[in-house]
Image (cartoon, rainbow over the protein chains, first blue to last red):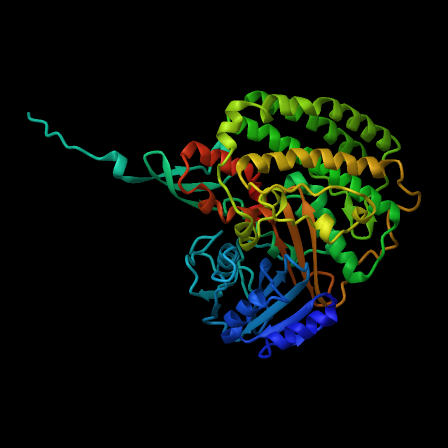
Length: 151
Length: 373
Protein backbone atom coordinates (compact mmCIF):
# COMPACT_ATOMS: atom_id res chain seq x y z
CA UNK A 1 0.00 0.00 0.00
CA UNK A 2 1.22 3.49 -0.83
CA UNK A 3 1.66 5.91 2.03
CA UNK A 4 -1.21 8.12 0.89
CA UNK A 5 -3.53 5.10 0.70
CA UNK A 6 -2.43 3.94 4.12
CA UNK A 7 -3.06 7.44 5.43
CA UNK A 8 -6.62 7.36 4.09
CA UNK A 9 -7.23 3.87 5.47
CA UNK A 10 -5.99 4.81 8.94
CA UNK A 11 -7.95 8.06 8.98
CA UNK A 12 -11.11 6.10 8.13
CA UNK A 13 -10.48 3.37 10.72
CA UNK A 14 -9.63 5.63 13.68
CA UNK A 15 -11.52 8.91 13.23
CA UNK A 16 -10.81 10.06 16.82
CA UNK A 17 -7.05 10.27 16.15
CA UNK A 18 -5.44 13.24 14.43
CA UNK A 19 -3.72 11.67 11.43
CA UNK A 20 -0.98 13.29 9.36
CA UNK A 21 0.87 11.89 6.40
CA UNK A 22 4.24 12.66 7.99
CA UNK A 23 7.69 12.81 6.46
CA UNK A 24 8.73 9.19 6.92
CA UNK A 25 5.68 7.33 8.25
CA UNK A 26 2.00 8.05 8.72
CA UNK A 27 1.69 9.74 12.11
CA UNK A 28 -1.25 9.57 14.49
CA UNK A 29 -1.79 11.69 17.56
CA UNK A 30 -4.11 10.11 20.07
CA UNK A 31 -5.49 11.36 23.36
CA UNK A 32 -4.39 9.11 26.27
CA UNK A 33 -7.97 8.08 27.10
CA UNK A 34 -8.54 6.73 23.54
CA UNK A 35 -5.18 5.00 23.25
CA UNK A 36 -6.18 1.44 24.03
CA UNK A 37 -9.19 1.33 21.73
CA UNK A 38 -7.25 2.96 18.87
CA UNK A 39 -4.39 0.48 19.27
CA UNK A 40 -6.79 -2.43 19.33
CA UNK A 41 -8.37 -1.33 16.08
CA UNK A 42 -5.02 -0.65 14.40
CA UNK A 43 -4.06 -4.25 15.12
CA UNK A 44 -7.37 -5.87 14.25
CA UNK A 45 -8.54 -4.01 11.11
CA UNK A 46 -7.85 -6.42 8.27
CA UNK A 47 -6.43 -3.82 5.87
CA UNK A 48 -4.09 -2.33 8.53
CA UNK A 49 -3.15 -5.30 10.78
CA UNK A 50 -0.37 -3.61 12.77
CA UNK A 51 0.58 -6.76 14.64
CA UNK A 52 4.19 -5.88 15.53
CA UNK A 53 5.16 -3.31 18.12
CA UNK A 54 8.62 -2.36 16.89
CA UNK A 55 9.57 0.34 19.34
CA UNK A 56 8.06 2.13 22.30
CA UNK A 57 9.74 5.39 23.30
CA UNK A 58 9.09 7.62 26.26
CA UNK A 59 9.53 11.31 25.52
CA UNK A 60 9.93 14.48 27.54
CA UNK A 61 8.80 17.42 25.42
CA UNK A 62 9.71 19.99 28.05
CA UNK A 63 6.18 20.84 29.21
CA UNK A 64 4.47 17.55 28.36
CA UNK A 65 5.51 13.95 28.61
CA UNK A 66 4.68 11.55 25.83
CA UNK A 67 4.92 8.04 24.48
CA UNK A 68 5.76 7.21 20.84
CA UNK A 69 4.83 3.82 19.38
CA UNK A 70 6.34 2.50 16.13
CA UNK A 71 4.08 -0.14 14.62
CA UNK A 72 4.63 -2.48 11.71
CA UNK A 73 2.42 -4.89 9.86
CA UNK A 74 3.73 -8.37 9.15
CA UNK A 75 1.40 -8.97 6.21
CA UNK A 76 1.85 -5.60 4.45
CA UNK A 77 5.24 -4.43 5.77
CA UNK A 78 3.99 -0.88 6.30
CA UNK A 79 4.72 1.24 9.33
CA UNK A 80 2.95 3.90 11.32
CA UNK A 81 3.80 6.04 14.33
CA UNK A 82 1.34 6.67 17.14
CA UNK A 83 1.98 9.48 19.58
CA UNK A 84 0.28 10.41 22.78
CA UNK A 85 0.93 13.33 25.11
CA UNK A 86 0.35 13.65 28.83
CA UNK A 87 0.26 17.13 30.31
CA UNK A 88 0.30 16.06 33.97
CA UNK A 89 4.00 15.90 34.90
CA UNK A 90 3.38 15.16 38.58
CA UNK A 91 1.30 12.05 38.08
CA UNK A 92 1.52 10.95 34.44
CA UNK A 93 -0.37 7.83 33.38
CA UNK A 94 -1.52 6.18 30.16
CA UNK A 95 -3.16 2.86 29.43
CA UNK A 96 -0.87 -0.09 28.95
CA UNK A 97 -0.87 -1.80 25.55
CA UNK A 98 0.33 -5.13 26.99
CA UNK A 99 -3.04 -6.69 26.23
CA UNK A 100 -2.61 -5.73 22.55
CA UNK A 101 1.08 -6.66 22.19
CA UNK A 102 2.53 -8.74 25.07
CA UNK A 103 6.01 -7.57 24.05
CA UNK A 104 5.17 -4.09 25.33
CA UNK A 105 5.70 -5.27 28.91
CA UNK A 106 9.44 -4.59 29.10
CA UNK A 107 9.27 -1.46 26.98
CA UNK A 108 6.71 0.03 29.35
CA UNK A 109 8.71 -0.93 32.41
CA UNK A 110 11.69 0.86 30.88
CA UNK A 111 9.66 4.02 30.23
CA UNK A 112 8.28 3.88 33.79
CA UNK A 113 11.81 3.49 35.13
CA UNK A 114 13.45 6.30 33.18
CA UNK A 115 10.59 8.80 32.75
CA UNK A 116 8.16 7.96 35.52
CA UNK A 117 5.12 7.45 33.29
CA UNK A 118 2.77 4.93 34.88
CA UNK A 119 0.92 2.44 32.70
CA UNK A 120 -2.58 1.49 33.87
CA UNK A 121 -3.35 -2.26 33.87
CA UNK A 122 0.29 -3.22 33.35
CA UNK A 123 0.78 -6.80 34.64
CA UNK A 124 4.01 -6.11 36.52
CA UNK A 125 4.95 -2.45 36.70
CA UNK A 126 8.26 -2.17 38.57
CA UNK A 127 11.47 -0.31 37.92
CA UNK A 128 13.65 -2.13 35.43
CA UNK A 129 17.23 -0.85 35.47
CA UNK A 130 17.49 1.45 38.48
CA UNK A 131 16.52 1.11 42.12
CA UNK A 132 13.92 3.22 43.84
CA UNK A 133 16.40 5.82 45.14
CA UNK A 134 16.82 7.31 41.67
CA UNK A 135 14.67 9.96 40.11
CA UNK A 136 13.64 9.77 36.47
CA UNK A 137 16.89 10.39 34.54
CA UNK A 138 15.50 10.82 31.03
CA UNK A 139 13.43 13.80 32.09
CA UNK A 140 14.90 17.07 30.92
CA UNK A 141 14.70 18.64 34.38
CA UNK A 142 16.58 15.76 36.02
CA UNK A 143 19.57 16.93 38.03
CA UNK A 144 22.24 14.61 39.36
CA UNK A 145 25.44 16.39 40.36
CA UNK A 146 27.20 13.19 41.38
CA UNK A 147 26.69 10.84 38.48
CA UNK A 148 26.18 13.03 35.43
CA UNK A 149 28.95 15.29 34.21
CA UNK A 150 27.66 18.11 32.05
CA UNK A 151 29.80 20.22 29.79
CA UNK B 1 17.96 -36.06 73.48
CA UNK B 2 15.19 -37.06 71.25
CA UNK B 3 15.34 -35.92 67.70
CA UNK B 4 11.98 -35.36 66.17
CA UNK B 5 11.82 -36.48 62.64
CA UNK B 6 10.06 -34.04 60.44
CA UNK B 7 9.03 -34.99 56.96
CA UNK B 8 9.37 -32.28 54.40
CA UNK B 9 7.87 -32.86 51.01
CA UNK B 10 10.63 -31.22 49.05
CA UNK B 11 9.17 -32.36 45.76
CA UNK B 12 6.04 -30.31 46.42
CA UNK B 13 7.75 -27.24 47.76
CA UNK B 14 8.64 -24.36 45.52
CA UNK B 15 11.99 -22.77 46.12
CA UNK B 16 13.76 -19.82 44.61
CA UNK B 17 17.33 -19.78 43.40
CA UNK B 18 19.45 -17.06 41.92
CA UNK B 19 21.30 -17.63 38.68
CA UNK B 20 23.83 -14.92 38.13
CA UNK B 21 24.67 -12.06 37.95
CA UNK B 22 28.07 -13.78 37.93
CA UNK B 23 27.32 -17.00 36.14
CA UNK B 24 29.23 -18.25 33.10
CA UNK B 25 26.16 -19.26 31.13
CA UNK B 26 24.39 -15.92 31.37
CA UNK B 27 27.11 -14.38 29.16
CA UNK B 28 27.38 -11.23 31.20
CA UNK B 29 25.78 -9.73 34.25
CA UNK B 30 22.26 -11.04 33.87
CA UNK B 31 20.52 -12.26 37.00
CA UNK B 32 17.75 -14.80 36.64
CA UNK B 33 15.55 -15.49 39.66
CA UNK B 34 14.25 -18.98 39.06
CA UNK B 35 11.36 -20.56 40.95
CA UNK B 36 11.76 -24.32 40.99
CA UNK B 37 9.73 -27.34 41.97
CA UNK B 38 12.21 -30.20 42.04
CA UNK B 39 14.23 -29.34 38.96
CA UNK B 40 11.26 -28.10 36.93
CA UNK B 41 11.24 -24.38 36.27
CA UNK B 42 8.03 -22.72 37.43
CA UNK B 43 8.93 -19.11 36.75
CA UNK B 44 11.91 -17.15 35.49
CA UNK B 45 12.28 -13.53 36.29
CA UNK B 46 15.18 -11.68 34.68
CA UNK B 47 16.70 -8.85 36.68
CA UNK B 48 18.65 -6.47 34.51
CA UNK B 49 20.39 -3.15 34.85
CA UNK B 50 23.76 -4.20 36.29
CA UNK B 51 25.58 -2.44 33.46
CA UNK B 52 23.04 0.23 32.66
CA UNK B 53 25.16 3.16 31.57
CA UNK B 54 22.41 5.47 30.42
CA UNK B 55 23.67 5.60 26.85
CA UNK B 56 20.46 7.28 25.70
CA UNK B 57 20.94 10.06 28.26
CA UNK B 58 24.62 10.43 27.40
CA UNK B 59 23.74 10.83 23.71
CA UNK B 60 21.74 13.96 24.51
CA UNK B 61 24.99 15.76 25.34
CA UNK B 62 27.09 14.43 22.47
CA UNK B 63 27.44 15.23 18.79
CA UNK B 64 26.44 12.71 16.15
CA UNK B 65 30.04 11.75 15.44
CA UNK B 66 30.57 11.02 19.13
CA UNK B 67 27.43 8.89 19.45
CA UNK B 68 28.97 6.37 17.03
CA UNK B 69 31.51 5.40 19.67
CA UNK B 70 28.85 4.68 22.26
CA UNK B 71 26.89 2.37 19.96
CA UNK B 72 29.91 0.08 19.73
CA UNK B 73 29.50 -0.57 23.41
CA UNK B 74 25.91 -1.74 23.20
CA UNK B 75 26.04 -4.96 21.24
CA UNK B 76 29.80 -5.29 21.08
CA UNK B 77 29.63 -8.29 18.74
CA UNK B 78 27.65 -6.32 16.16
CA UNK B 79 29.64 -3.13 16.68
CA UNK B 80 29.96 -2.33 13.00
CA UNK B 81 26.25 -2.78 12.32
CA UNK B 82 25.32 -0.60 15.29
CA UNK B 83 27.54 2.17 13.91
CA UNK B 84 25.89 1.78 10.55
CA UNK B 85 22.42 2.17 12.06
CA UNK B 86 23.25 5.59 13.52
CA UNK B 87 25.03 6.68 10.34
CA UNK B 88 22.09 5.67 8.15
CA UNK B 89 19.69 7.61 10.39
CA UNK B 90 21.83 10.74 10.26
CA UNK B 91 22.29 10.42 6.50
CA UNK B 92 18.56 9.95 6.03
CA UNK B 93 17.88 13.09 8.04
CA UNK B 94 20.41 15.13 6.08
CA UNK B 95 19.26 13.55 2.79
CA UNK B 96 22.82 12.64 1.89
CA UNK B 97 23.52 9.94 -0.66
CA UNK B 98 26.74 8.16 0.32
CA UNK B 99 29.13 6.98 -2.45
CA UNK B 100 28.60 3.49 -3.87
CA UNK B 101 32.00 2.42 -2.58
CA UNK B 102 30.90 3.14 0.98
CA UNK B 103 27.72 1.09 0.57
CA UNK B 104 29.65 -1.92 -0.67
CA UNK B 105 32.29 -1.75 2.04
CA UNK B 106 29.67 -1.29 4.76
CA UNK B 107 27.76 -4.33 3.54
CA UNK B 108 30.87 -6.51 3.40
CA UNK B 109 31.93 -5.37 6.87
CA UNK B 110 28.43 -5.98 8.23
CA UNK B 111 28.42 -9.52 6.93
CA UNK B 112 31.89 -10.20 8.33
CA UNK B 113 30.60 -8.89 11.65
CA UNK B 114 27.65 -11.26 11.42
CA UNK B 115 29.95 -14.21 10.71
CA UNK B 116 32.23 -13.51 13.66
CA UNK B 117 29.26 -12.96 15.95
CA UNK B 118 27.71 -16.29 14.98
CA UNK B 119 31.10 -17.96 15.37
CA UNK B 120 31.25 -16.73 18.95
CA UNK B 121 27.64 -17.82 19.45
CA UNK B 122 28.56 -21.30 18.26
CA UNK B 123 31.61 -21.35 20.50
CA UNK B 124 29.83 -20.29 23.67
CA UNK B 125 26.65 -22.24 22.99
CA UNK B 126 28.67 -25.42 22.68
CA UNK B 127 30.41 -24.53 25.92
CA UNK B 128 27.08 -23.89 27.69
CA UNK B 129 25.97 -27.39 26.77
CA UNK B 130 29.20 -28.96 27.95
CA UNK B 131 31.32 -29.11 24.81
CA UNK B 132 34.41 -27.11 25.65
CA UNK B 133 36.11 -27.98 22.35
CA UNK B 134 33.65 -25.75 20.49
CA UNK B 135 35.01 -22.75 22.29
CA UNK B 136 38.52 -23.26 20.92
CA UNK B 137 37.35 -24.02 17.39
CA UNK B 138 35.04 -21.03 17.30
CA UNK B 139 37.61 -18.57 18.61
CA UNK B 140 40.30 -19.92 16.30
CA UNK B 141 38.24 -18.92 13.26
CA UNK B 142 36.87 -15.72 14.71
CA UNK B 143 40.40 -14.46 15.21
CA UNK B 144 40.88 -14.37 11.44
CA UNK B 145 37.92 -12.04 10.96
CA UNK B 146 39.15 -9.80 13.75
CA UNK B 147 42.52 -9.59 12.02
CA UNK B 148 40.77 -8.30 8.88
CA UNK B 149 39.00 -5.67 10.98
CA UNK B 150 42.24 -4.68 12.66
CA UNK B 151 43.96 -4.11 9.33
CA UNK B 152 41.32 -1.77 7.93
CA UNK B 153 39.64 -0.25 10.98
CA UNK B 154 42.40 -0.25 13.57
CA UNK B 155 40.10 -1.86 16.11
CA UNK B 156 39.27 -5.49 16.52
CA UNK B 157 35.96 -5.60 18.33
CA UNK B 158 35.11 -1.97 18.94
CA UNK B 159 35.72 -0.86 15.37
CA UNK B 160 34.00 2.58 15.05
CA UNK B 161 34.67 2.36 11.33
CA UNK B 162 31.56 4.18 10.14
CA UNK B 163 31.06 7.87 10.44
CA UNK B 164 28.06 9.91 9.27
CA UNK B 165 28.56 10.30 5.52
CA UNK B 166 30.96 7.43 4.95
CA UNK B 167 33.91 5.67 6.54
CA UNK B 168 36.70 6.81 8.86
CA UNK B 169 39.32 5.82 6.29
CA UNK B 170 39.65 3.74 3.16
CA UNK B 171 40.07 -0.02 3.27
CA UNK B 172 43.54 -1.48 3.47
CA UNK B 173 44.98 -2.36 0.00
CA UNK B 174 45.20 -5.95 1.20
CA UNK B 175 41.54 -6.06 2.29
CA UNK B 176 40.02 -7.88 -0.68
CA UNK B 177 42.71 -10.56 -0.69
CA UNK B 178 42.42 -11.09 3.03
CA UNK B 179 38.64 -11.47 2.84
CA UNK B 180 38.82 -13.92 -0.07
CA UNK B 181 41.48 -15.90 1.76
CA UNK B 182 39.27 -16.04 4.84
CA UNK B 183 36.22 -17.19 2.86
CA UNK B 184 38.23 -19.96 1.27
CA UNK B 185 39.57 -21.01 4.64
CA UNK B 186 36.24 -20.84 6.45
CA UNK B 187 34.38 -22.79 3.76
CA UNK B 188 36.95 -25.50 4.31
CA UNK B 189 36.45 -25.73 8.06
CA UNK B 190 32.76 -24.96 8.63
CA UNK B 191 31.92 -28.65 8.28
CA UNK B 192 33.84 -29.15 11.53
CA UNK B 193 31.14 -27.13 13.27
CA UNK B 194 28.50 -29.53 12.04
CA UNK B 195 30.62 -32.56 12.82
CA UNK B 196 31.22 -31.43 16.38
CA UNK B 197 27.79 -30.18 17.36
CA UNK B 198 24.97 -30.24 14.83
CA UNK B 199 24.92 -33.98 14.28
CA UNK B 200 25.78 -34.81 17.88
CA UNK B 201 23.05 -36.95 19.44
CA UNK B 202 23.53 -35.56 22.96
CA UNK B 203 23.33 -32.04 21.61
CA UNK B 204 20.19 -32.76 19.59
CA UNK B 205 18.49 -34.43 22.54
CA UNK B 206 19.15 -31.38 24.65
CA UNK B 207 18.02 -28.83 22.09
CA UNK B 208 15.16 -30.27 20.04
CA UNK B 209 11.73 -29.30 21.25
CA UNK B 210 13.09 -26.99 23.97
CA UNK B 211 11.81 -23.46 24.52
CA UNK B 212 9.37 -23.49 21.63
CA UNK B 213 7.94 -20.20 20.39
CA UNK B 214 5.22 -20.36 17.76
CA UNK B 215 5.08 -17.92 14.89
CA UNK B 216 2.11 -16.08 16.43
CA UNK B 217 3.95 -15.70 19.74
CA UNK B 218 7.10 -14.52 17.98
CA UNK B 219 5.16 -11.81 16.16
CA UNK B 220 3.23 -10.73 19.26
CA UNK B 221 6.42 -10.47 21.34
CA UNK B 222 8.34 -8.85 18.48
CA UNK B 223 11.14 -11.44 18.41
CA UNK B 224 13.56 -10.70 15.59
CA UNK B 225 16.78 -12.04 14.14
CA UNK B 226 17.54 -15.78 14.00
CA UNK B 227 15.40 -16.21 17.13
CA UNK B 228 12.30 -14.97 15.33
CA UNK B 229 13.12 -16.59 11.99
CA UNK B 230 13.48 -20.01 13.60
CA UNK B 231 9.78 -19.67 14.48
CA UNK B 232 8.87 -18.83 10.89
CA UNK B 233 8.54 -15.09 11.43
CA UNK B 234 10.01 -13.54 8.29
CA UNK B 235 11.60 -10.46 9.82
CA UNK B 236 14.89 -9.91 7.97
CA UNK B 237 15.28 -6.14 7.55
CA UNK B 238 17.91 -6.77 4.88
CA UNK B 239 15.21 -8.45 2.80
CA UNK B 240 12.13 -6.36 3.58
CA UNK B 241 13.58 -2.85 3.88
CA UNK B 242 17.02 -3.11 2.24
CA UNK B 243 19.68 -0.55 3.14
CA UNK B 244 23.30 -0.06 1.95
CA UNK B 245 24.01 -2.58 -0.83
CA UNK B 246 21.57 -5.31 0.22
CA UNK B 247 19.29 -4.52 -2.72
CA UNK B 248 22.11 -5.48 -5.09
CA UNK B 249 22.72 -8.98 -3.76
CA UNK B 250 20.70 -12.16 -3.93
CA UNK B 251 20.44 -14.10 -0.70
CA UNK B 252 18.12 -16.45 1.09
CA UNK B 253 16.29 -15.59 4.26
CA UNK B 254 16.71 -18.54 6.60
CA UNK B 255 13.31 -19.61 7.87
CA UNK B 256 12.22 -22.58 9.97
CA UNK B 257 8.88 -23.34 11.50
CA UNK B 258 9.83 -25.34 14.60
CA UNK B 259 10.92 -22.41 16.77
CA UNK B 260 12.92 -24.48 19.25
CA UNK B 261 16.48 -24.18 20.53
CA UNK B 262 17.88 -26.45 17.84
CA UNK B 263 16.41 -24.45 14.98
CA UNK B 264 17.57 -21.15 16.43
CA UNK B 265 21.01 -22.69 16.38
CA UNK B 266 20.55 -24.01 12.82
CA UNK B 267 19.35 -20.60 11.61
CA UNK B 268 22.63 -19.05 12.75
CA UNK B 269 24.69 -21.80 11.13
CA UNK B 270 22.91 -21.27 7.81
CA UNK B 271 23.23 -17.51 8.12
CA UNK B 272 27.00 -17.81 8.26
CA UNK B 273 26.94 -19.59 4.90
CA UNK B 274 24.52 -17.05 3.47
CA UNK B 275 26.74 -14.19 4.68
CA UNK B 276 29.66 -15.74 2.83
CA UNK B 277 27.55 -15.82 -0.35
CA UNK B 278 26.71 -12.14 0.07
CA UNK B 279 30.37 -11.22 0.46
CA UNK B 280 31.21 -13.29 -2.63
CA UNK B 281 28.89 -11.19 -4.74
CA UNK B 282 30.37 -7.90 -3.56
CA UNK B 283 34.06 -8.37 -2.86
CA UNK B 284 35.25 -8.19 -6.49
CA UNK B 285 32.92 -5.36 -7.47
CA UNK B 286 33.79 -2.66 -4.94
CA UNK B 287 33.51 0.51 -7.07
CA UNK B 288 36.28 3.08 -7.10
CA UNK B 289 35.59 6.48 -5.63
CA UNK B 290 35.76 8.48 -2.42
CA UNK B 291 35.29 6.72 0.90
CA UNK B 292 33.16 9.47 2.36
CA UNK B 293 30.60 12.00 1.16
CA UNK B 294 31.36 15.67 1.64
CA UNK B 295 30.37 16.46 5.21
CA UNK B 296 30.41 19.57 7.34
CA UNK B 297 32.50 19.23 10.50
CA UNK B 298 29.49 20.17 12.65
CA UNK B 299 26.42 18.12 11.88
CA UNK B 300 23.07 19.67 12.69
CA UNK B 301 20.03 17.62 11.82
CA UNK B 302 16.92 19.46 10.66
CA UNK B 303 14.11 19.54 13.19
CA UNK B 304 12.10 16.34 13.09
CA UNK B 305 11.97 12.66 13.97
CA UNK B 306 13.93 9.96 12.18
CA UNK B 307 13.74 6.20 12.46
CA UNK B 308 15.90 3.60 10.79
CA UNK B 309 16.25 -0.08 11.51
CA UNK B 310 19.02 -2.47 10.50
CA UNK B 311 19.54 -6.20 10.92
CA UNK B 312 22.25 -6.91 13.47
CA UNK B 313 23.47 -10.42 14.21
CA UNK B 314 20.74 -10.68 16.85
CA UNK B 315 17.79 -8.99 15.22
CA UNK B 316 16.34 -5.63 14.47
CA UNK B 317 18.13 -2.61 15.87
CA UNK B 318 16.02 0.51 15.52
CA UNK B 319 17.48 3.98 15.98
CA UNK B 320 14.99 6.73 16.73
CA UNK B 321 16.43 10.24 16.76
CA UNK B 322 14.42 13.32 17.66
CA UNK B 323 16.21 16.50 16.66
CA UNK B 324 15.42 20.08 17.60
CA UNK B 325 17.90 21.48 15.09
CA UNK B 326 20.94 21.61 17.39
CA UNK B 327 24.21 19.74 17.09
CA UNK B 328 23.12 17.39 19.86
CA UNK B 329 20.04 15.20 19.48
CA UNK B 330 17.01 16.03 21.63
CA UNK B 331 16.30 12.37 22.30
CA UNK B 332 17.82 9.13 21.07
CA UNK B 333 16.20 5.75 21.52
CA UNK B 334 17.78 2.44 20.62
CA UNK B 335 15.35 -0.38 20.05
CA UNK B 336 17.77 -3.13 20.83
CA UNK B 337 17.06 -6.69 19.70
CA UNK B 338 18.25 -8.40 22.87
CA UNK B 339 16.02 -6.33 25.11
CA UNK B 340 12.98 -7.53 23.19
CA UNK B 341 14.20 -11.12 22.80
CA UNK B 342 14.79 -11.48 26.55
CA UNK B 343 11.22 -10.54 27.50
CA UNK B 344 9.50 -13.87 26.71
CA UNK B 345 12.17 -15.98 28.48
CA UNK B 346 9.66 -16.90 31.18
CA UNK B 347 7.22 -18.11 28.55
CA UNK B 348 9.90 -20.23 26.85
CA UNK B 349 11.47 -21.76 29.94
CA UNK B 350 8.37 -22.49 32.02
CA UNK B 351 7.98 -26.23 32.53
CA UNK B 352 11.48 -27.19 31.39
CA UNK B 353 14.33 -28.46 33.53
CA UNK B 354 16.82 -26.02 34.98
CA UNK B 355 19.65 -27.41 32.84
CA UNK B 356 17.54 -26.65 29.78
CA UNK B 357 17.12 -23.07 30.93
CA UNK B 358 20.82 -22.67 30.15
CA UNK B 359 20.24 -24.02 26.64
CA UNK B 360 17.25 -21.74 26.08
CA UNK B 361 19.10 -18.68 27.34
CA UNK B 362 22.10 -19.58 25.20
CA UNK B 363 19.98 -19.98 22.08
CA UNK B 364 18.75 -16.39 22.40
CA UNK B 365 22.39 -15.31 22.04
CA UNK B 366 21.99 -12.53 24.60
CA UNK B 367 24.47 -9.70 24.88
CA UNK B 368 23.79 -8.00 28.19
CA UNK B 369 25.22 -4.51 27.46
CA UNK B 370 22.71 -4.34 24.61
CA UNK B 371 19.84 -5.08 27.00
CA UNK B 372 20.93 -2.57 29.63
CA UNK B 373 22.29 0.13 27.30
